[in-house]
Length: 109
Image 1 (cartoon, rainbow, N blue to C red):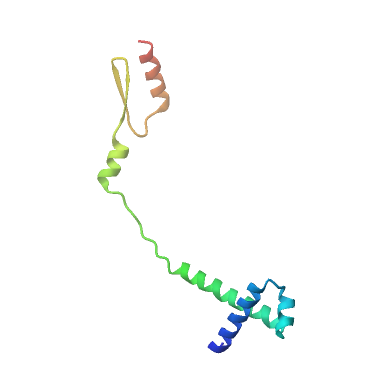
Image 2: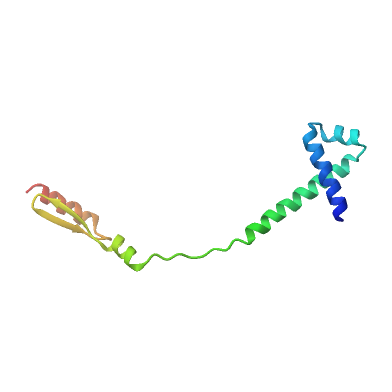
C-alpha cells in the first residue's frame, strides 16, 4: 500500500472513530464506501495484531541457577525441635510416621 493511501485511510478511520457516528452513517456523510472503510479497519487491525505477535516472538528467555551455597543452606539444614530436654533434628525426606512416634514418646516423658 502506498504511504499516501495509508495515511489517507488512517486519517479517515481516526475521524470515523472520533465522530461518534455509526460506520454506515459516517461513510454516507463522507461519500466513502462502507465496504472500503470496513476493509481498511480490518486491514490495519490485522497489521497491528501481527506486529504485536512479532514483538512477542522477539522475547528471549534465559535460565537462572541459584548459587550452591544458598540452596544448600536452605534445603540441607535440618529442622531442630526441642521437647523438654530432648532435641530432635529433622532432615529433608524424613519418615513422617517415625517422627510422630518419636514426638509422642518424648511428650510423655
